[in-house]
Length: 85
Image (cartoon, rainbow, N blue to C red; front, side, top):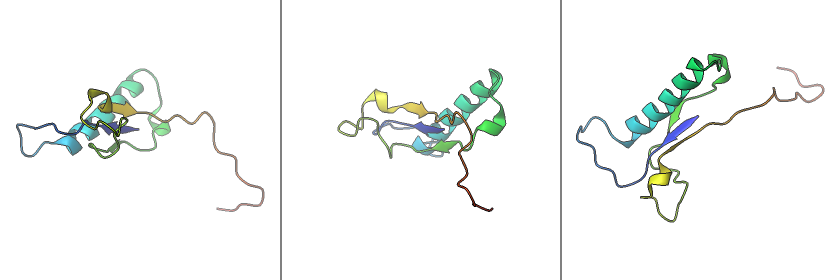
């Protein structure tokens, strides 16, 4: 799961910016999923992406770029025959 921000925002605290906001956004989504019964073991990663991957690349300032992406794997990946760990 990854959190994203739009470009161009300014932050009052110099120690808190787009990276912190996007990471917090993803982590809050993880906590909400856990609260509603999604096991923590199903979360592979919680990542902040700041403004690096805008949903609307032609307008990185658009508010719709502020989002959380959640990837859900329905079942375990199949292991090829003969594959060994």
